[in-house]
Length: 248
Image 1 (cartoon, one colour):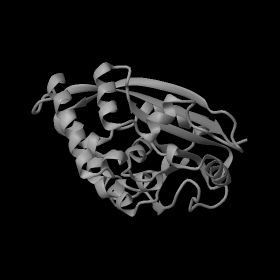
Image 2: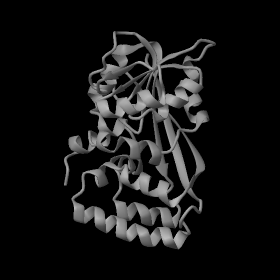
Image 3: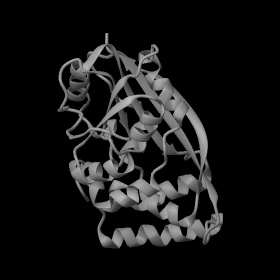
């Protein structure tokens, strides 16, 4: 089994599949994270762990001025194609390539579970302006639905799913306990898109061939049973959970 660090840096080898298979972020959830720094201005936002730009796109559409940061150059190359003109930098949550007090918000989409909380919290605090916001957001399949829970059991729970099933994200000084809010919504999916979603997961990208074959074989049965056949569209239920905490 791959290490945590190997999983966290595995996505570049499947950047195209990741971009096709992963859902967008609800605009209202992103707006809620940035609400404290709006104030009638265009906030400068660092999107950390930006990947292929799923969150960057929504930030741009919301009127923010994002910069995208990711440890994987292959993911950033995909992002530059999807969101032209956004500045991109190689970096991590623990080592941000930004000056002190240079951004209004720092957001992590599907990414905080990969960081070391104390180091990342301190580094975010360094680059934020006073009263700036740390925002964390996850799109997770809604395992309260039986067939979705069956899918998750076959694929194994992700690091994010395991964290969110427990006490949730750990945020350290200079931030206090963040506010939290969730949104439930359905994502229309064909069988092809379901496969993209499956094959974009770090556990599966890094799994041995025999394990990937087992996962695919068992998921074929589930997809047939729920009617995800050919070009038929099914609704995959998601729950988006966001957190925000202001820098004192």
